[in-house]
Length: 389
Ligand code: NAD
Ligand code: MG
View 1 (cartoon, rainbow, N blue to C red):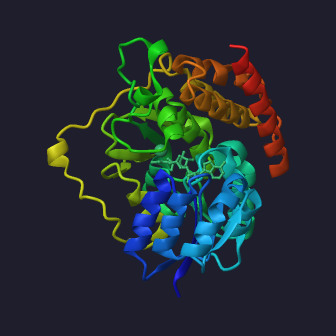
View 2 (cartoon, helix red, strand yellow):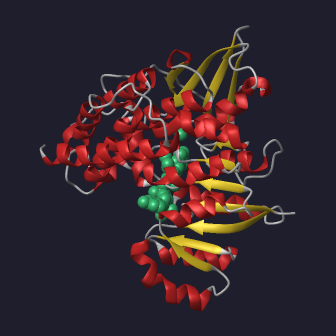
View 3 (cartoon, rainbow, N blue to C red):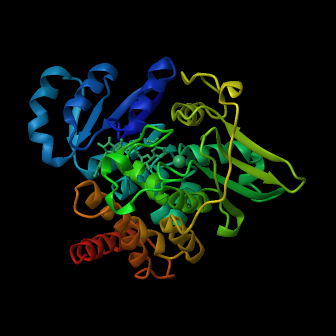
């Protein structure tokens, strides 16, 4: 029996890499549902290639998309809106959900997969940043498998002992979370004139615009710090960030006997995607073999928190718990969108995130509805904070 896969965010960077791996293993996996937001024409092409039973687009483009879908992929049922994403993530015929929507918009559907016992290939790190404890608890209760697609977390997952989930931390002394440092790691120019084009030009990875800007501010590493705390059930003191410009080591686990286990590979998201699809087996990902002799040198340095205040704020949010993660995540999303639209400067993003942190509280939200309500409040707050800049 082929595994039935719902791919949320099919038109994005992770979505495209996932389709590439799925196509290589069409004998094992069948694409059940795909989603996009506004790029319905790109989704239509995906449907022509993969013949899913369902496709989901945003409500705002449904009427425009419907005739072309009816004409060209009559066997694919076109749906729209946030509830349809939740339905596709929790559908009884679905085994695997690839959660590759960007931002807080991905939470309701990835949470639905967690509640419904799916294997979740979690790319949407914002889900865990916003609701980590609730999310992991829901997965535990339903028997869902939360497998990290984020390359660092996938590396940590591979480097920790198999029995980690039964007895966390046994024998392990530290998690090293590595990061390239982004395009401005050693930048000497004027931070106030950085353009969106400069900010999205990541040296090693090709990714969507939002995560690329997050990498440039190192907010991405901060979000990943929070993500790691929840995924691996550890406190902030257990994780250390290490800058590694080549992105060959994707993260590491240090053991009490002095061993350090790292996962390495070329920077290509098809590796973690294939790993999660096949786990605990292995399948070909189409990724070029790692040639260390050609790379010749791997470098490491401590993160510069003065240069990248977003990283510091996110680590503080991990230490405090409560709603801090929701506040900084929402404010960051609004600030990044404003920067990409030319409304604020690159160097203003961190200020918005820092001010949002001050709005957070250490009271833990008790339900996803509460998480989404705080998220909405934080977005409104960020909109007006940016308006007042
Ligand atoms: P992307 O911008 O390339 O794609 C985003 C996808 O989400 C698109 O399919 C888009 O249609 C959909 N989408 C956007 N807004 C939506 C909304 N409001 N409702 C429903 N769907 C919406 O992003 P990406 O780079 O593929 O990243 C996706 C997620 O994976 C992010 O959470 C990111 O942090 C994470 N991630 C990405 C990479 C990478 O290499 N790209 C690596 C690690 C983690
Ligand atoms: Mg990552």
